[in-house]
Length: 258
Image 1 (cartoon, helix red, strand yellow):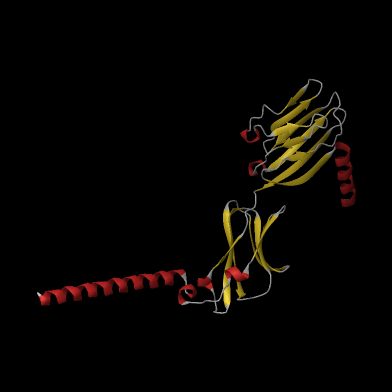
Image 2 (image 1 turned 180 degrees about the vertical axis):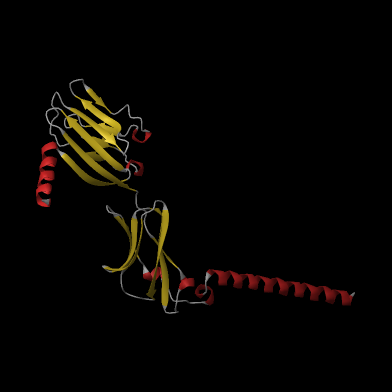
């Protein structure tokens, strides 16, 4: 029974041209949503709709000479839509994350057909930044690092040792900052990299251990930021106190001479 129902659905979709497809694209790129025709006939009509409200964004009526994308009420599509006059395909230029959603094309005339696209638009990826985090080091023989990215969404941030995944963190929200820690041994010879990726692209930053991970050579560099500030303040106070005592001694000596 189920097998018969599946065959019927496949036959129905093939007969009436009902299809659905997922398209992924990067922000700022152009994307073309194709129809299933190679050439529009004289009596064909094609309409493109967007979103759950089925907002009309483009239409073609070849007999009436209508090829319209200019009367779109949705400001998000202003000056971004083009139509292929031969096939009726819709071109969205300079696409943004605001254009994510469902697009439906309905064609009538010689052949009835309908097709739906779900378009996912991903923001541009920023380059991961690797920095040292010496105050968080758990031992004197290891180097504590952190990889960070700002204002990202729908991405995964990962540490790799060679080609092996060490750790990762994912986020589905938009405009959020991510950071991922890593601890390595000083003077280690292994290759490490931090990678941010979405379903389309990735950005990689390679770790320069010799630059960011150096054994402590003095007490100032070995302590954390807060401890360093405290030491500097105490040193300044000692210096001021010493100067005050010296001035007092000089004045006292001059007073006795007079």
